Image (tube, rainbow, N blue to C red):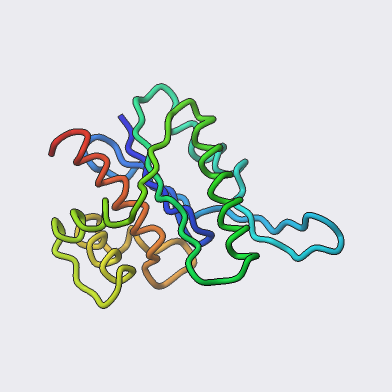
Length: 172
């Protein structure tokens, strides 16, 4: 059984847990630079081929629960909103093509509230709360990717989304 949590952003991640809550794999969101035409700006797009090669083998033959947050563009540029929407669709499609359905979490509080409370998270904003809760549950080292020195909130969010699914589905 696999529980997959996805933080869709360019600085996001995909986390896969087993039924006991052990980390099977974490992948920072793979990104490629893409230019739609010679005159257009360069966009950062999620590399769905890399998602496929890293994630599909770990899901094969397993009952899977996959969840990702709905994208909120907030205040920002039109380019940012377009890129967010494109990447959201790319990640969703890549995961659906694994043969599993993907649950969309319509508001972050659906997983944040129970996870922050369960793991007594501390912080000043949702990013620091997420890092605090994930560090208490999984250990701070699991939040620090190779080549970095600091925990990443995208990894923390992905892990906590996967953990939220695991707890909800197994009733633990």
